[in-house]
Image: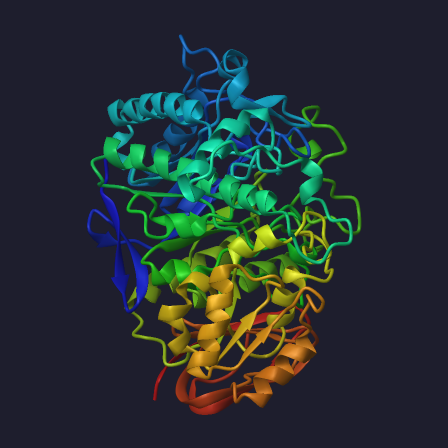
Length: 607
């Protein structure tokens, strides 16, 4: 198999395959029969994530019952079926023998295992019983299946093209609890009791009740047992992920990178028992090399806002890890799942025929290109890796879009050669994942993915339209990162102990900060911008438009059509990359015109 590793390059992680730098841009799809591997291969893409699942049980047990898989590898343990995965791999390698394959493996237990282990499973609304995410038996038997899968890959004819692994689990493969409610069921009691004993030295812990977590008008959670369970369930999921990642590392002699969806500190689906808030447990793990999330679904991915990161990406980089972001960008070619696979799915799931559907794409090829540019500009300035998730297949099947994706790959291929960026954000926006334990599910402090309502997501969306770029970090990293910023913003309204220490450190270091509170839990664009102005933060643009800065680039997304002015904090060499008709120049001010919803990108280097 191919070797892969990460190496720091000018302060950011660089992907090496066989010790050679590789542009970390990739393609994947759920629906192999609608895949467009050939299009991406023609445009120079070489990394492909290929899906496999141990079960045909739903990847979405909590809300829809959806699964993309026709085959569960181990549904019949005596006759494993690798065909769905291997057919896709062979399809890619037939067209491109030097392609680089990352198996994307859903470690979830088959139905026979669920039936055999009633004390290790939890009920779900649409998926029957599923494994408790922190179950010892899940870890033990999941390890056996995972090793069996790895052995198959190592012995296969395609093994020489496999370079790394993405481990998936839980709800929507993103390591959320299958019930989005912390696996709060009888199966959890023995594990919670054990954790309380190990953590607090107390015997006889009992499970809290579901209503202990539900918002009923309270400001902050005061039930200590409920707080403990919130912390426990998230850490338990993180420990299971780390366990399986270690299995892959050991089975591949620590010669390949391993990653996963995890660490959605800025997204919680209105549940404090999400399962994804144990990132601090994984950042120093030698077993997990990259973290993934989609572009935030906030406001149905409308134009005119920042499609922010769900992960505190700058903390991930600070710890030497790579963010490999899933860009499942809808286009004018995005159809309903019912049209993609006629007769397989009910009309009620993933609707595209409603005004507020996140599953609908822009109406034209040109706006679809702008959506790609918007996402890419954000990820490039963050030095994040990218894979284009062609979810139902065929979303990018247009020469205009594929030419754009080819251009982006060429831009990214140049990226490792850039020297340290001459410009960087002066604002740190802090994630406080343990702070969720102080809140309630369904509370107004917690927005949904799809609505611009008060709360943490509202504050993050506001930050994106202040005209000032920002970095996102975890409060646990404040002692190491605060010195790099002029000001700090704390959007979590009920801080954890680590959050309180970070605020206290700001006061000790005389760093101005703006913090949400239980009573004032949403920070508006106007409020944040005024705070930035009062404390000497450089503002690149007028309020309302979105500015991205970092990694040797400046990006600008337009809310309304017109002449735009970027005011830079110093003179730099400016080279247009896409979106704006201007000449290369040395300046501290840049003027150009943009249409509504358009994005421009510029490279910047020292004068």
